[in-house]
Length: 273
Image 1 (cartoon, helix red, strand yellow):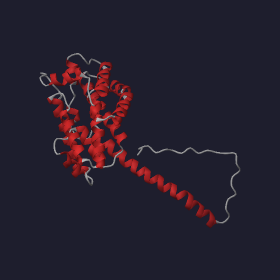
Image 2: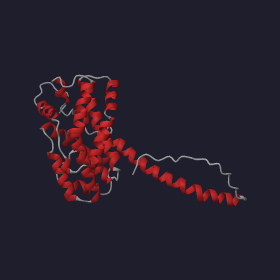
Image 3: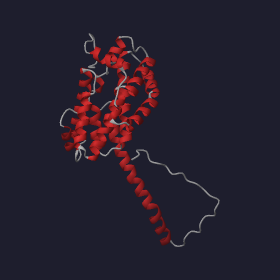
């Protein structure tokens, strides 16, 4: 399902206009049979797309109360160590962890959890949730993703519950980390997967940029320039994650992983990771 609605193009020809029917009754019948179904169908598609867009914008908004603002994924240590000093170095750092690190891996877990939940594969979903919960390189990153996942599930149950959601959650039978939580809640609500994963990556990038803006610090304009520059990275990573399998999981961002570990003993901290 595509959130955006195609807009048909109106074309003209050189043919002479057809001779209109005579009589008010004939004209009314023609309008009713030709125009009304098109309007009804367009309205139905628009309602479904609007509901999907509304929910994705809400769930993956910075205002959704999962505590994302209190985590930096090791960026705080990278700033203190001089790895990130300006907008350009922040962009380079985020490009790496989105495309080759935690970002890509989280996207794969989201997509796989979504598909397992959608197909009713409870055993597969349980295995994915268990693997995702262990697929983090440091204690603080484990706290970050599990706390946000738990908060996402609790809020979804309280404010956005739907038929089948409780059964899907119970099927995980253990900790549910953030990308798995987003995947299974989106599946329960029949959200389209592609827009969901793009919105998820946008939320990740936005939160990391927000952390960098407070730590470097950066101005609002530089922050938006960084987010704009990451657009093709987010799009490409989302496409890869959509087509990847669990066998494609892997990370090559050792510096970012070490940053998360070093942050655990950092003396002065604003963030929990």
